[in-house]
Length: 512
Image (cartoon, rainbow, N blue to C red; front, side, top):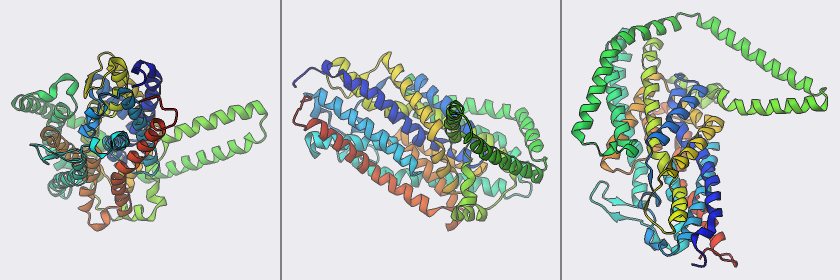
């Protein structure tokens, strides 16, 4: 190698900037889909979802994220290829970071929920192939665990495994709830009768979710199965017992909410919207006659309003604007809104647990390329795993800040696509979707299955929607999403390969 890695501090700086850029894309795409069903069911507004997701994602990443971060994504690239070229790997990871960030933003613009993990994998594949050819990529390597292969082949298997298993799980759960509760004549009363049981099951599954999926930083993923079962059962039992007095408050709140005059409220809402529209129009007209300094202040106000639209946007507008989406929502089975409201709190709780576990596990993994850059620069050598120490907190905090920014400014696109446009979501449906996906992620994570949380979420949503018949799913959105999964590896891989080749094979070559 021409120079020691200490000469490439600029890659560390660029990597930090790129890592924030990639985290912005993760927030806009990957994180947004966790709360999409809660927004789609109107259990939360976009603003509320953004606040909750920011709190739980960042908390999970910083408090429970692993500080021993894998530098090579998911056993995709052969680390031995770069042992003698640490600076080359540093630059390669930099190319991966910017490729991932660019693709996630483009996918968010196109309203395609894609996997961050698979994006990182695609970038590593493209970079490794340019560096040392196909032999440096692990395409298919036998293992003792299902699906008995790792590498790129396992990623392809996950395209089918994740959504299929999640669809079956969520379908079964919603079918049970629909048959025993929602279609009953006394559905509202029956919902409260089974509420303690639902709370117990929800708490139990989510406790497992956090232990096995999102607590590697505390070593909870190594907890013996018997102990984990006992702890989760104890927590769920206590929660179910506490539900009895709490359910009275919930019932009183639901009764008060649904006793209001809905037509009058709707008319007031329309009047408010018209008034706001007239105010905006008046402001624009007045600004034409403003002096220069006032126009500058008005321009600043317009920029501020543009930024605020991302969290004040109405994700349900497509129901009126898009005939396909409108017909799909109109044809869906309607249940007692008071019975549906009982599931609202369970859905929000599950989404928060999902977000917390995602922050603890997936966010730490997604900053792997930057962790590799930092570790190589600090140690001067290539290692499959590197202990970040105190710096790990700063790296995770940087990722958390980028995620929060991306979610607040651009997360509404994916929330609208997955929560409104792909299918009709209500609190009961959203509860089944969130819990069904979480259940499969728990099992898959423990058994080492190559699952994607994004794919599980989409699969669970599709499964519940299919219970409405063939018209229950927006086929255009579904096909576009599936295409996005497949081309993720290709697009990010090719982008990373081009950037890497441009930097490595220039006439003035300094990295090798």
